[in-house]
Image 1 (spheres, protein in one colour):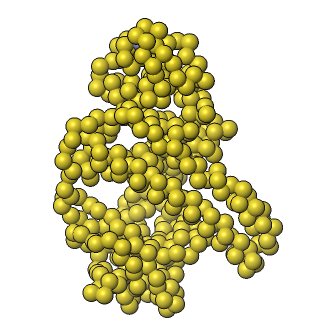
Image 2 (cartoon, protein in one colour; image 1 turned 90 degrees about the vertical axis):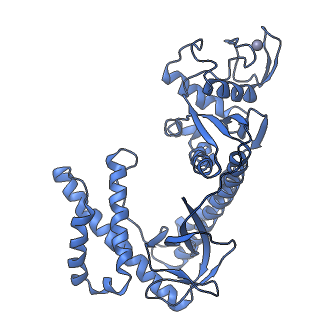
Length: 383
Ligand SMILES: [Zn+2]
């Protein structure tokens, strides 16, 4: 058994939009209220957040602010559970300290149970009439929970999680090495190359013009609101294009292969390089690796992360010769030892694959982490 997620666009009518705004608002209010309380407690005693304690306080809070009772109480409890999860991630050093939710950013609340799909394909939530929904693919399994969200550009979505049997694709035995770059987004040892579409770079000019217009508008004016919407729509489009592209490639790779080995990138370290930060954020390797991992789970493809401190480009994948004088501009080279012709990127993928299968390892010269991270950064910008 596994979880499956479906995201559908919903079209609430005027009355439903008003009610959803209340739900977003109450959820945000509760989240921010308890984040403030918890921050104080944490600063004083470094004590962890406890859902059970705060759930009791929520009951008191609802007596104080009666309008909190107008929305589904389980969604408010869920908000506290989300906050607890955010704190746990922070304490485990997996995330930054939780931040306050803002009215102008993406809004959301979750309904943990008591929701359903009506016969005519609408979404029924507690305390609401059914909302029109576009179901573009069949929902399989038992409904677990649904998250309602609203983007800064004003679109509404429902993300439904179900529990279902997942059929794993038959194993076909293919194992590949994979490298990520900026010229080509993904290179594999097969070899295959997927270009980097640079969606953000392409919309940068338009975005700069619109952002400049936004900055000239008077704060709080309705024209500023309109200008903000235009900017939000450009960002949303870029994010959607990128998501679509990465979903397609990660689906193809995880369905076609039994195991994928890739370098464990230090993305946070790279983003600190200011010249590259924008390009690296645009290419969104971290998101892609996350897609590979979860799709790998679903479709039965093993994802192996390879230690990143290893000179994958300089080693001949055929005979193991290390070409020390290989420069960053050498896109193609011929091994002086075995005369094998190499495409730089594909050769690196073959080495990553071999490295993960432990065919090599001992003979690889030691690199200091610092040098290698810099090398990685430079490697990725080369045209
Ligand atoms: Zn060779």
